[in-house]
Amino acid sequence: MMSVTLYHNPRCSKSRATLALLEAHGVTPNIRLYLEQVPSTHELTQLLSMLGMDDARLLMRKGEEVYKLEQLAKTHLTQSELINAMVNHPRLIERPIAINQGQARIGRPPESVLEIL
Image (cartoon, rainbow, N blue to C red; front, top):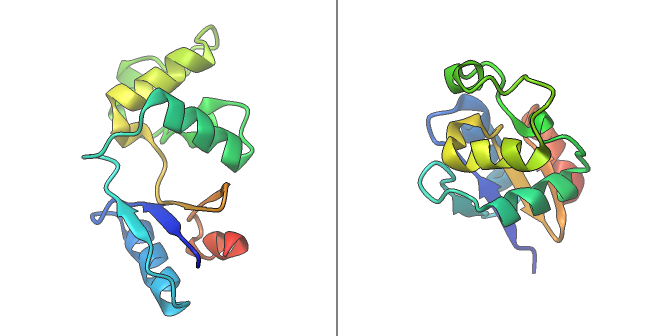
């Protein structure tokens, strides 16, 4: 039995497209509305590992206003500080993210999530 979790924002077209794609493949994911159920620092650290990312900025939406306001591009910031910024401002977290059996993929493009099914 496959248990897929989708970090989802229903207002995002890519997120909606990824959800529709999963459902078209017979997968009904557990929906995590990450803007409301904000992931913890531990969860984000695990997520970065599952995505194979060694820099938290790779999981950030750099076009978000808060990215500029918080000056998150500054190179002296630690990974811990960057992860805390995502906890404090979940809009920074790239979306959608599908998780299945210890692996994760960002749904950009939506088809990339099929790699972990």
